[in-house]
Structures are given as C-alpha cells and as structure tokens.
Length: 270
Image 1 (cartoon, one colour):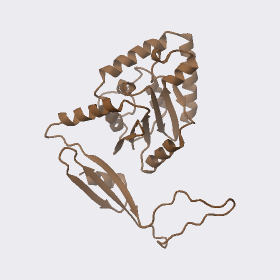
Image 2 (tube, rainbow, N blue to C red):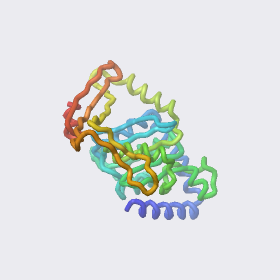
Image 3 (cartoon, rainbow, N blue to C red):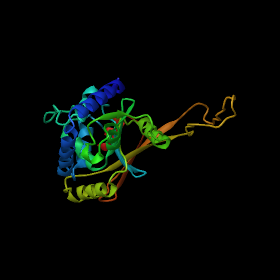
Image 4 (cartoon, rainbow, N blue to C red):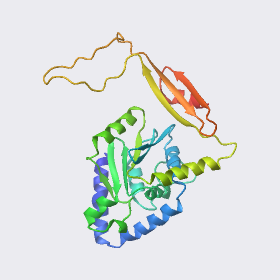
C-alpha cells in the first residue's frame, strides 16, 4: 500500500536530514533554482505529467484560493512516490510515458509551500511547515518537495470536493494550497497569447443529466430509516453532455452521449 511506503520514506528522509544537517538546505537552494528556471512552464509540466500517465482529460480550477489540477490517468504507484520525492531520481527517457518523474514537477514549488496529492485512495502532502515543525528548522531553509507526509486532517469541504472529482473519473488530484494565483494566471495568459494559427486550445467539461437527481444525503430521525422518494420507476435514464469552448474565438461545441467513457470523449474531441 502507498500509505506504508509514504510512512517509510517519511521516517527515512527525516533521519537522513537529522544526520546530515546541511543536506536539506542544499536541496532547498536547488529547488528554488529549478522553480525559478521553470517559471512560466508550470502548467506545461503538469500537462506533460498527465500525458506521461496516459490521461485522456485534465481539470484545472481555482478553489477557495487554491489551485487544483486533476487528471484521469494511471494513479501513483510506489515508483512514482519515490521518484517525486528524490531530487534527480528520474529514470525517464525521452519519448517514454512512465509517470510523475523528472525535475519538471519540482517547478510547482514556485506556486506554493504546501501541496496535497490524492491518488490510489491515499492523501499525502509535501509541506515546508510540517518539515519545519518536525526538524525544528526555519522553513526557508527547507525544500517543499522532499519529505512526504500522510494527511488525515483535510477540511471536510475540500475532501467533499475531491470526492466529487473522483466521482467524475479523476484518479490523481493535486491541490496547491494558498497558491500564487495571479502569477499562474499570467502564465496561462502568456501561453494563450503565444499559440500559433495551427494550435487550438479548448476548455472542456462534461455534465451528467438524469431523469431523477442523485441524492447524496438526507436528514432522518435517529433510529429511523430515511425514505428517498422516486418518480422515475427505476429507469434512471441518463445522458452525458460533453462541451468545449475555444477561449480565443468564443466558439462553443457540444455533444450528447448515452454514457461517459474514454471512447465517447475521444470521439467528441475528433
């Protein structure tokens, strides 16, 4: 299980930091350099990671001052956790599609000092403040992406939002807490301004319409079984609406399918 691996890496890297007091400070300096070097390419790096994990869709949104990036590709495995934690540990080769590796992800440290990741039914975080507390060191002397911590205290509203994304088919979700929103928006703006006539960028989403709304919760007296009224006679008819908008021209496209799956989504893109 990933949780066991994360706990083991956490213990290993904390012990390593205590035995080599200057190691994390050197890593912090390297991370800062890498983040600054990749500044302006953070979104591109996130897209590349999503493509490497064979995602067919991604989501990017601002949520209560945080940046959320999600994809529906292969979830994190043990090698991904190890590689994303170790600086320069990537074995990624040009043209390969082997997941969350390479120094590119380190660039996201420019956005925030705390990243929560959900994948493979596990929540974990890279957090300067947690490192500082454990090691009793100033946070500016520590890297963000090095020591992973399991997370079990996520705010309920954020956890519910992540659950909603999982229900939509997203398998790996990054939450960049208290992110540098304006800088990131400027990066996206610059990308849009630099695209040529042969490049098309579309914003896509999907919606599920049923003949009866899905009930996720209902109040009931203690000890009594709640009763959910239904009018559809068990039919549960549904349609999936795929939509896209071209932010440059304002053109809107949509298509209605009987089910939501990768084949229908790819068909819509074509």
